[in-house]
Length: 241
Length: 241
Image (cartoon, rainbow over all chains, first blue to last red):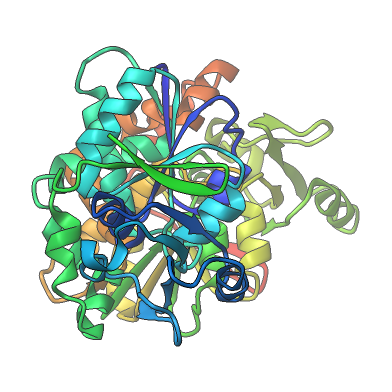
């Protein structure tokens, strides 16, 4: 690994030349956490789609007995969907063996839109160690794309990027960091010891607390609690690790 | 002052509702530094324009004895222009009493494009104390827009944003920070004591060193060395403070 580049917004990742890079996508609150949890709990696969309409259309073509329609708009479950975007909804009893069509506001359009066709890994605090291990094992240059919030910067995704960069540079071999990777790493040095405080302070964390999802925050902050690496390939997300 | 919002990229600032806010624009390497220096050295006024073509067109309408055509592309003086974008070019002997038409790659399109029509102050490390003092005196909510690099994140602008946020919150009264302001403030806590090291580590700083502009970096890093506040109003930049 010679280079680690972080992109704080989808537009920046979309403009970058990512050919041949190991791509990591982050949406700590809450898609990364929810998807890792669903795979840990036995979901067969997850199909990310950009829009609610596409999710409904696709679901109509799948076996109604095994598919689940999942996703949120403004943090709330979409009307008529089976599940929203809280990791607490994705228990084994609900998701084991199922195919999940997944439409979240920030992660899904990044995964299935700007980065569509490229292999990706999904990162949250819950699987940072597992993702770091697969990146080190594969050895290529790393590109870390934050899903952010409505196209803009989000603290929790940038903070989690810093947690990953910190682990990747811990070995001490020389790695070239881009500007955003330097910034994220500095943030991790100050706040990396308390991810839950980062989530509570973040704009989206405060919004989720207002919505009544405050209990999701400690789950999304728990480092290495869901050691699964969701891998996006050919439009499907499956678990590894 | 109840809120301080930082925007790391021009697109994010352009989408935000900035009505009624005190707007600060940052381009540490090097437009903010160069413009503050030019005003300190007696330039009558500076007219920021978005493109090289617009600069040439406008210059043709101005008195050739008093106007200077200034700006860069890829860090280098534009062919046929009088001055580039190094603060060392803007000595009194060259700029006193002159009208400067100014076309830089990142700051000019932000000032004269996305934020056009809105009063703005320009910030670098060289005038952070002076800008902070005018913001505290005026008292309104603050919006800090980083010029960044080709539409993306830049470390030096985000770092300088952190230096300003740090001074604005030092009083201890409760201020609401957005996610990017939190990130910038954390960076300042780690690296705020050595701005020159930040510039040397940044992508654009390394590029300027390669181009032969390494001597500009300590100038651009020298905190409070040019205590002038460039104010953008009605399409003109003039000095205050």
